[in-house]
Length: 282
Image (cartoon, rainbow, N blue to C red; front, side, top):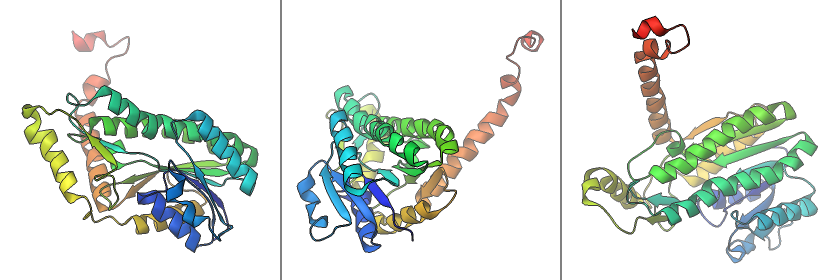
């Protein structure tokens, strides 16, 4: 495996933590970042391949400073992994706008800011790989996760356009889309609606209770996901979508199949809405 410089956000736990551990084992160079750098400083001790830095992705000046530190330290960045993020449980109606806006600031705007800050580095190098830790929840929505879904759908949409913009420049974009994994996402790394509405008991509340009850016993292994992410970085033509886990694969393919069925069902009406189609609607 060729040596690369990785820049990873949100490394204090979950996918980010497992990825850094695997990269260290493979003797890769890593810029590991987290809001609380004291939680990750252990990696930098006696390891010249690791540089740790405090990073709040919602703070633009902090993002610019940390990317500059990475370049000053290692001279380049080859792979950017946007992992920082958190979840929110609650129906759309129950959700608190100030809280879900804060989540969007991290999950979408924070990732977008890091991407935009690293892109000049990648353009200068004429190479680079952006890997976003998205979610199967960025492909299909679920009760209780509407605003979380929105943050990941937004990241998916941005990335889809970005991938087409940067492909001629030698830059790749991959969205890693996990289902349930044994991280803190359904535990301490999420917030829930403060007030609930009884009418959503059978949908949003049942769904959120089920996910919370599974926290700590999910089938997905962050350690194996880390190995898969590293493999993606070695491909000359990496995929845009990487469905991560059986659950994600099943849910995403079902969502696409159902959408295609619906598209075809209404194809006749959809295909007669141009000027000249007036007789069709008479």
